[in-house]
Image 1 (cartoon, rainbow, N blue to C red):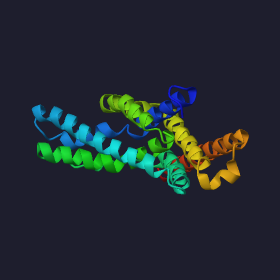
Image 2: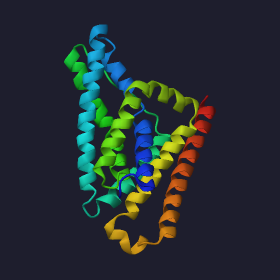
Image 3: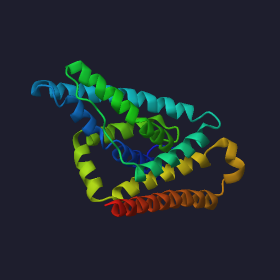
Length: 227
């Protein structure tokens, strides 16, 4: 992928959207881990906890980008990402993060919790980057400040406007489809035919969004019946 082409900018936009949608609950993790500490220590915890989590996530993402070059792993990652896109729509997230009693315990809690929660984020960004390490770094640099300082606002917006979650899920599903299409083992199926690739991508996005919508409607009906 050449630098600063339309394809490059669209991939960068996809990475930023993925970061915002999947990492929007980081503020909750940070807040719960640091809530019992003195005020003067809370800023230190937020800074060093976020710095450590970012460093580990960046390293993992670069490793994933490299691993996706191995034959068969793009197909596996793409299928897994389809499942993640679906889960984003239907799964009710819980934040079981204990408050820590000391500065370093809180920092460790944030790094561990964020790394565990960020595995889907790492895979999604690795796929959206199409093997371009510069895209990974640029995406992280753009989205990290937004996530750290604006994640509470993002969460409220997603609760108020659920369509944002559907947009994020659609981007994930599209990224998953592209990963599957780029699998060398499937080159005989997709080849260079653009219409086949776009048709497959559209099918994956529609199926994921439709399945999530049906599942959410059935959950709502079940809750109403129970109530």
